[in-house]
Length: 95
Length: 148
Image (tube, rainbow over all chains, first blue to last red; front, side, top):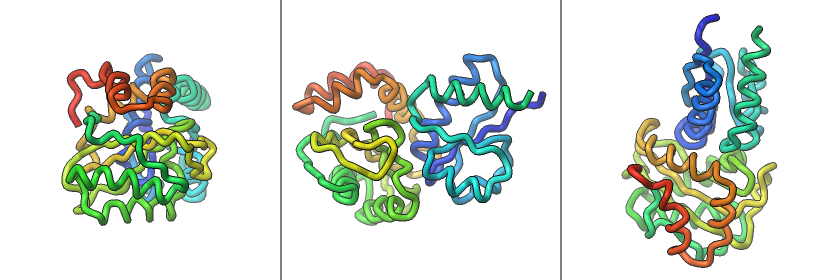
C-alpha cells in the first residue's frame, strides 16, 4: 500500500489544524502506519491531493459537498483516543 | 508558549463576539497584532462558525496569517461565566487567542499547547483558577524548551 496522504483542515490551516495534525502524526506513528499528515485550510482543502480529510463538525458540512475523498469528523482535536480510533478505522476501511 | 502578561482572568464576556474581542485585545496590548486582526477573527467566526471550539470547553480563536499579525503569539482568557458559541463543545471556559505570521511559524508553541490541552485534569484546574500565578504554575511543566 502506498503511503497515506492525510489532510487536517481548519479555517486557515494554521491553528487548530496544526494541533490536529500533531495528534494524527502521533496516532499513526504509534500504530506503525506510514502517513504524511499536513495542515490545510477549508477554502483550498478540496482541491489539494490527499487520501482523506480530518476536520471539525462545522467544516465537514462544507467540505462534504466539495471533497472527492472521505471526510472524517473529529469532535475534540485534543482527544488522543477519539483521533486514534477514527484514524485506525479509516486505515481499516481501505483494506 | 504563554507569557504571564498574556493571561487574563478579569474579563467577563457574555457572548462569543465580546469574547473574541476581549482575547484579541490581549494580543493587541502585547503588540502582536493590529486592530484589523480582531476584526478578522470576528468575521471568521461569522463566516465559518464555531469550528475553533476544538474540544469540550476549549476555544482557540484565530484568523488567517496576514499583515495584521506582527509576530507569533498566544494568549489565554479564563471565563468563569462560560460562553456559548453554538458548538457541540459548549460551554467554553478557556479561550486561547492565536496569531501567526505564517502557516509554519509557531510549531513549538502549538506542540506544547497541544500536550497541555490533552491533559484534562490540568485544563479543568486552569478553568477554575482564581489568579494568574496559579495558572502559570499549571502551565509551567509544558513550557520547557518551548518558545512561540
